[in-house]
Length: 453
Image (cartoon, rainbow, N blue to C red; front, side):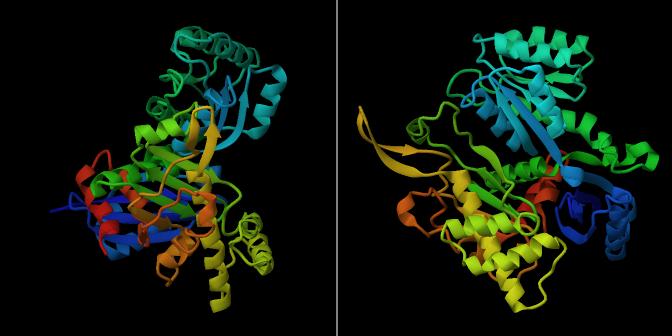
C-alpha cells in the first residue's frame, strides 16, 4: 500500500500543506491556514493537518517535510572585496540560497560597519573576497574586525581558500559560529555558488529556524525538526527538477504580498556569456527578489514602477493605497479583481525585466557588438506563475503572465518570446522541492502536473 508524506510551507502570511502519495507522487489533498506567528507557528499546521486528515486519515501519521519563510524568512548580509566582483557574486549566491539580502558592503570592514551590519539584523553573514591565490588581506581583515567585535551570528566563509584557515582561526577564537565553503569566485569570470548555497542552508537549519522562536512546543525542537530549508531555496530546487524533467528552460515568477521572486533555470550559451562583459559570470540557476514589487505591503511602489514603465494607469494609485493600508484586503467585486490582476501583471513584467536585463548594440574599439546584461530569457519554453493572486484567479495564465512581455520592444528586454504558460494552482512547487532528495520519483511525478495541459 502506498504511503503519504505531508509537505508544509510555513509562509509569511499563509501556511500551505499538501498530502502526497509516495512513490506515485499523486496529490491526495491540499489545505491552507493563516500563519499563526502571533501564537505558535504550529497552530496553523495543526489546522492544515486536520483538513488533510478529513480528506485522508493517513495524514495523522504522515511523515512531515517543511520549508519556511515565516518570521521574515532568511535574512542575509554580504561582505565582499570589490563591489562589482566578489560583493556582487555574494549577493547573487545569497539570493539563490533562498535569502533576502538585507545589506551588502565591500572594501573591508571597520567597526562602524559592524554597527550598520547589526542594525540590519541578518540571520546569516556571507563573507566573501579574493580569488583563489589572490588577495587575502581584505578577507582576513574582515574576519579580524568581526572577531574583535565579538560577532555572534552565524557566518559562511566563501572567499579565497588560501585565507580560510586564518579566517577560521580568528572566528573560532572569538566564539563566532561559522562554516567554510568553496570560493564563490575562484577566478575572475567564474561564479561557483553550489558549495556556499549548501553552507547557507546548513546554517539556516542549524541556527536560524530555532533562533526565531516561532514555536515553543517542545522548546521549538518539533518545528526545527520539520523544516528542511528556506522556502525560496526549496522552490528553486523544484524549478531545477522541473527544467530537467521538461528538458528545456523554465522560469517561475512568484508574486507575493511583499515581494516578487523570479527563479530561472536557463542553459547559458558560452558565446552569449562572453558578450555580456560581466566580471561575474551568469549561471544557469538563479533567483532574484524584488522587494518593491508586491500585491499588498509594496503595492504603492509596484504601481509607481508600473506607471513609470508605461504598463499601468496612474489611476490605480488609489487601489494600491487601499491594498497597502490593509494587507488582508480581498477584492469584493470584478473591479477590485481586475485591479489586482493589473498590478500583478505589472509586477511580473518589471520583475522579469530586472532579472533578464537588456540586449543592445554598442560600439567599441572592436567595432559594432551586441552587449547583454542580465540573463537571456528569450528562448524560455515554460513560464510558470505562482502566488495567491494567480492561483485564485479565474483568468487564463496568459492574461497576467504575458500581458506586457512584448511592450516596448525597442528597449531590448531579453524576455520570453513564445513561452508556454501555466499557473501553479495547486501550489506543488514547494512540495516538489521538499520531496526531491528523499522521494525523487514522487517529486518528478508531482512536477509533471505542471507540464500537463
